[in-house]
Length: 310
Length: 282
Image (cartoon, rainbow over all chains, first blue to last red; front, top):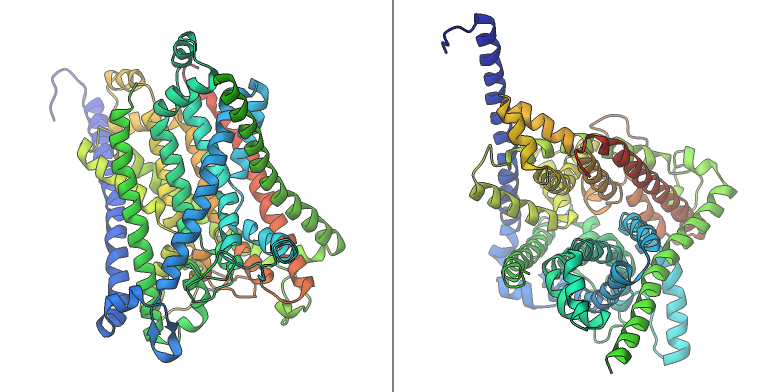
């Protein structure tokens, strides 16, 4: 590059800077393409690995029969899929109303000081690892629960059941949903509240009719983040669910979820190639489930964002 | 009628606050009190490696797991921070079109939602195809996959929230894109720190990906290619043991884990305050 009236030194420095700019851009492109490669290789590897079991058994049999008996070459994991749905849905049913109400209280009703401390405390709690939840529920809740159920309701249970797993997940997703909901409520402008209140609504009406809509997308993405955590949670669930491959008839029976099936069969998995392949098919199913629900969530959220704009 | 509703809702809210705080405090209280008792009785378990029959009630501690956790979490966090900064900068409008960055963000979200057990299996298949046994390096790779989407999201968000004027001024002074990016990164340091610590916390507490990649060895990790284990994995093993003394050790391990995480989040708050001096305005 030649510029009149500029000394050679300056031009040299400029071209050096431009080269640096170019190189760093290329590094960035490489790094970003790593993610794409990662995503593609995920799917490819999972499919390749589960190919063995898919080619021998029909997909329908794998997905919808509930006999997981590797010793008899039966790999139906419907009970695990069923268990995953039950546990996730049940825990979300408990977690959503409680944590949203708690978040509304923290964001709208509590005085400033209380809010600051409470919300930063809950942020800290969101960092507690899931194993700790599993541990406390297993050693602190399960024995007590088992005795109490027998005493009060005459229900025989070991305590390691779908219900305990749902409770564990509920407690685990509380801080996630609460802290994100508080954040999205606090991000709304004060005018929105003032207008609504000046029209004569009570505080709860204002929250119900105005704030929930304006903060809707944020709240929904909070719920979905919690949902994703609950769906994919492995260790905490594997510790308390009892790992039994049958279709549970009540909430107080042992069951299985997709991730806990993978973990609990891990020991045998390395030696039997067929079972290994079946477990990879389980993982593929889990991945598809999570990805599809994520994409649906994204689409719904974008639609709502357009509709509920204030 | 409206006031009745208001009152009912308020009661519901307060009871749900109690439910949330109560359940979480219950978890914290149990871990801390039982863990503290178990450590006070036998403080050696933190600093000793397990004996041959440790999980069967034998003697020893879980220092190998603490060391393994640190060896894996620290490098993976550093690597994924560097990668995350590069990717997040690439997502800015100077480098890529809006469409491309939308797609990358969608992939990031999907990766964020993927359960860590799938990352574990993914790295495991690579290990199998190289005929390797579980090692620290594999654990580090799995943790990078786990942390990268989280940290990238936070970095991306805090970079995107830098005021446009800052960039415009920088460009008008003739800076190249990298130089502007440096300024932007500095401006959003406190957001980046928050993201890093959240990713680090997730990696520290994650057992599912480690158990498949690094394994559950009971020896001190010696190098990148030696097998090892992490704290959450040990907690998982200890908790399902039949021996009450081993289960007490699980509380002690959980106590250590929670203390590390509490210290991390407190430091993150302090650091955020310190670095917010680079933030112009507010």
